[in-house]
Image (tube, rainbow, N blue to C red; front, side, top):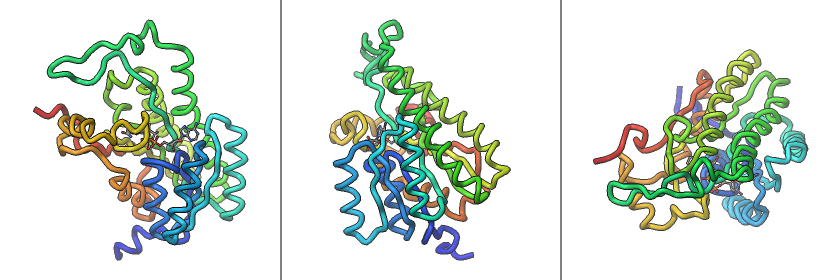
Length: 276
Ligand SMILES: NC(=O)c1ccc[n+]([C@@H]2O[C@H](COP(=O)([O-])OP(=O)(O)OC[C@H]3O[C@@H](n4cnc5c(N)ncnc54)[C@H](O)[C@@H]3O)[C@@H](O)[C@H]2O)c1
């Protein structure tokens, strides 16, 4: 078996929610640069326009679709239209997600972490909790459901969620709603993987550690922030969207045929423990 054949995604079709930025854009580029047809779904119309033009300019077969994953009816319509245009759907990445705002502590200062009142349980606002769950958990559910409807009839397909290292280890600076949403998404993934296995559909999750994207206003793009984050990562650097290319290709190609129900962590060793 040649490597080109094993990881071949030429002619395959894929959709990516939150595809106009960061990790989702990384998935989209990995597939589209290797000959797949990719639909980018995102609520940010400006970013979609810019990225679709850029990728098309580089010869990739991509389309852009403005949709909010919390509007399940609109999401269903968009997925139906995309799949009608494609003819079939091979892979769906349920990736759109938001930063939840502060948790109950801030970043390390020496050996201490300052308390953050706004993120403390007693002050955690309903609106914030509900928004994070709505995008990061309910939006994933709606995306997986919409994709599965099309894949079941073909008895074939790949569904990939973006969870987080935070689904396996509490990060108090990120806060409770995000932990709950990501852990919920990871367990939802296992449940759906079991259900859809009989239909020949695999369902997996990619759990990133700390990546430089536009999340949280793109604060990780600041070199000083990157340096501080890298100090706590065993491989001594933060992740880049291009670090996602390998996993995206693995899970969307024949190479991933026998993998299902797995949450694959990609974090530079973050979960191993704090670097001394
Ligand atoms: N960056 C990290 O360090 C990190 C770590 C772990 C997990 N993640 C997860 O990775 C995923 C992608 O995040 P990212 O870091 O690339 O962020 P990002 O902000 O760069 O990209 C997220 C994209 O999702 C879109 N989006 C947000 N809400 C949406 C909605 N309701 N409907 C449609 N689109 C919506 C945004 O417009 C944006 O284009 C998220 O699920 C996030 O929780 C990120």
